[in-house]
Figure: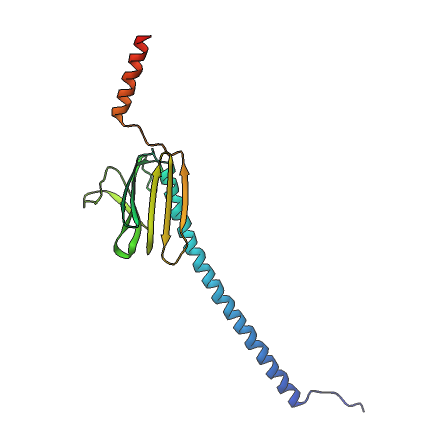
Length: 188
């Protein structure tokens, strides 16, 4: 008779112990990967919101008639755009204001028609919360250029520059220029 080779109880116990060590290492690696993925997903969601917010602000200014009103208070600028075709609520021409509220230094976007700040109860506007915990929201306009800088706490600043944003000529100047042209034509 031939003797059959088999595993001893000791060999089986050692292999089970080694398998346990390898499995615990694999589980901890999977756990770390899940935590890392969750953190990355959270970061991407915040980045997506920030990107969307800057895109809306960019399009508000780009689609405007150039009539921008800027009021600066400390690190924050109140930006009102008298007419823009970039409406989130399907208005033909909308007035849009970007304001930083004191509570949690929250940046909001106010859209409507013919409203003034501060808002009254009867004003029909839409207010969207854009970002919280801002350190600064600065908008400056020089000639045909508009520079926007947004800085959230503990994050890098976001900035962009738009060119070709021409301020509209007031009606009084249009009439004055028209009279000058008419006088020049009549003299010829």
